[in-house]
Image (cartoon, rainbow, N blue to C red; front, side):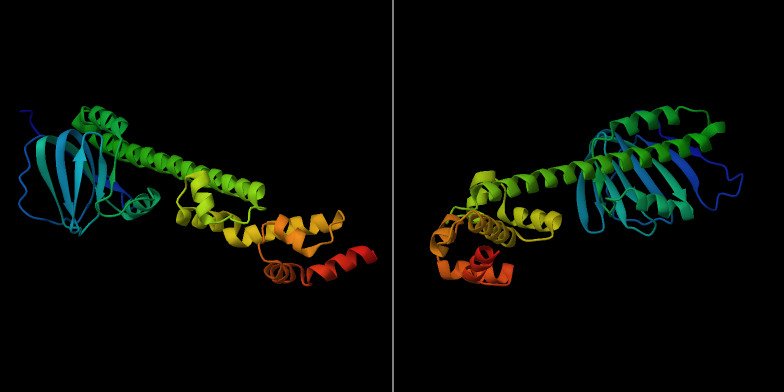
Length: 271
């Protein structure tokens, strides 16, 4: 079994803003013996095997390439499942809290997956001589923060793109099918294969108007276009714009346009 490595970092300057305390490689099997809390921040990177992270009443599986963080006074424990080894950097200072805020998704027990590049970089930093342990530990930690921040930003942008794409599809489906009397959220769900609650949420978020309200607006706008092009039968216009009830169409039209359909038609004829 490989030996543990622990580089202690000398406190040689004013590091009140940020200071790494030690840089540790744990190869020995960890036996779960209850939760403990420490006064330092800790960043962990799993190098090998599988284990469990117990923290704040939760248990999370951890494996190679996973990274997680523990804040001061947070009770936690790490348990080995199979050949677990990991490295951690302990750090303190005012800037430590700022760095934690920058990674965005952090919460006690949150595990960042797919961080193999961090593992490789940390292994190289651990191999640096003890006289440079301060630079090595700070470099390893700051690289982890930079990598995770960039990864989070990419995921956030991807999510925004997915939401914008969904809204564009919803809008197009409404614009193409507004004349269907049977148009509904159920129809949208079947056509686009999106959950109706998700569609309602992202559409309102991006468009600042609900799906049903947008549908009514499109229908009334098209009714106005038909009137301006010579259509005069309110019942026919209502049906062709997706309304099964002319009276309901008149109420919606009046609410949107400030006058009933017949008055709008009269205004066109008088102009």
